[in-house]
Image (cartoon, rainbow, N blue to C red; front, top):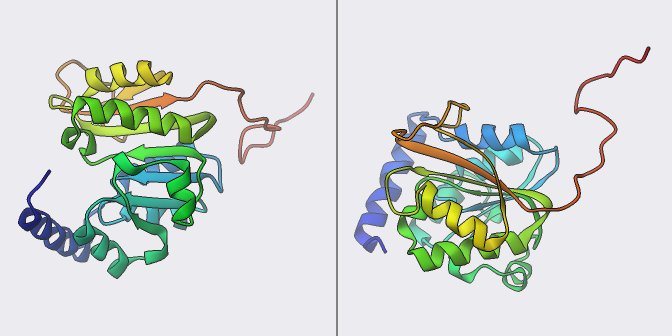
Length: 210
């Protein structure tokens, strides 16, 4: 775990960056592209809460969890504190989420900002199993992290297989750039097997009939 003093410094730094207008919503735009409107979305390791807030503004029911009070204080200062809960990934369960007053099933779950790098192999595998249990059928699990570190693509793929999640795609950033072996960052998309949601047609597009 990161020492408390370092976490406080991190929180102060993030508060300053937000004040300067730094873009912390790029992952939220990626998720918004994948999710149908009004999706239930959980951000694991939400930090200062920018992604959950942006997704809320885009019409989703988004929540964030983080184990660190210091960064959640920043989230609650800037955004609506009702969207965030102090909760570690090891504590995730449908019962605990219900007790916290948030949904226990999600269309999309996000883990971004190098969260996997701070988890042991055992905890990462357990996190993937927990996520699988919280996703609806055909739900998505999106993981963004530094590629060449603990919790990178290789470890994620192994954890996904153990959790029964399907690998869909991997990019080198949130802008859909191709992932290469030497890419510094990875954005991985996994899905829970199950029936596709039924839709009458592509969102926002009228289908011409002959």
